[in-house]
Length: 425
Image 1 (cartoon, rainbow, N blue to C red):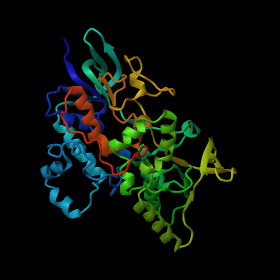
Image 2 (tube, rainbow, N blue to C red):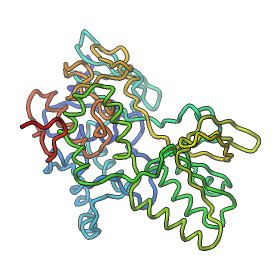
Image 3 (cartoon, one colour):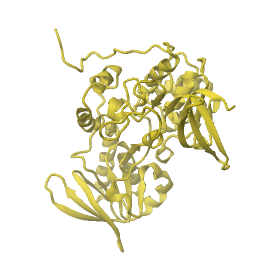
Image 4 (cartoon, helix red, strand yellow):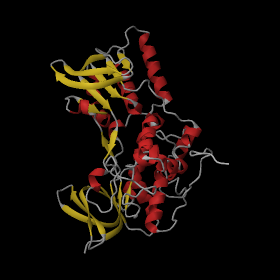
């Protein structure tokens, strides 16, 4: 009979990798199944000098267990880089450095299995276990079983309907593969907002230079180029306290707050905004600035013509329409959850009125039964903490404690100075 693992985790991004790292010293048999042949974290945006937007303590394990051998600091010590990192005097690791750290952890953990594409997950009543049917890299079909299921399949690049059927659209997830081509293309338009859009705009602005033959254009629906809000009281919203408050709200209110709070975690770093301005200012000393920026511009339709890609824009302030022609379009339009594609047919999975998984406060999908858990598929129920690397170790502590039925990891539940709900005497 096939082995039935205690935990079957689907997907190996930072969150399920963190789960495997925190489970390693516990008496748990965990199997993490990943379709790719190796760990890879946002390879298309691994730009030189780019840092992650959270401090190094937001690694896989530290916020749950500062003594873990899988910490970022231990990775640095293991590779004789701890003192250089100390002298650098920055809390924020390079993006490539964080990726290398995760690769190191993944290569050391026996529970992580690459080359396992999970085609379907069902429930086997006879075994009282979840059944994952997988295709290996060589085409072989295998089946894996687990008492508990943790879905950490991450998100997929999202292209809005107005651009979905257009030729020549490149999502920022694939930017590096097209970087050289885009630097030489006469007319390039970036559609979207946030850090990825800003990084691509700045990178191309520098690479194309002041003698670029055409224009680099950046359009966004946002009324301005929002900076990431990074004040300390705002950061308290990435806390168990705020998750408790947010999760208890009606879903309509949560959705409204989610829209209002996007710039809290999808804004642009202030340093990058300043760098873009300084680059534009320097270019203006020599005459024409080979770039255009437009806010409050919504792409309502698009088509391929003999001259390239024709975008139809609507200005959200004036309601005026205009057109813009581009040879290549970079879609900085974010990512969408993929959890829904795996939960169909699983027992006891609850959905909300919009057909989304109704995730309980302790991250279960099966109406609190504690057999099916989700990682980074619960933004609509748990707020901006869902994709936050700094909350990954907290979520994994909750999940592992629930699976084990004991407090294997201490969970800090009250950390904020502010009160998010009503004040009472």
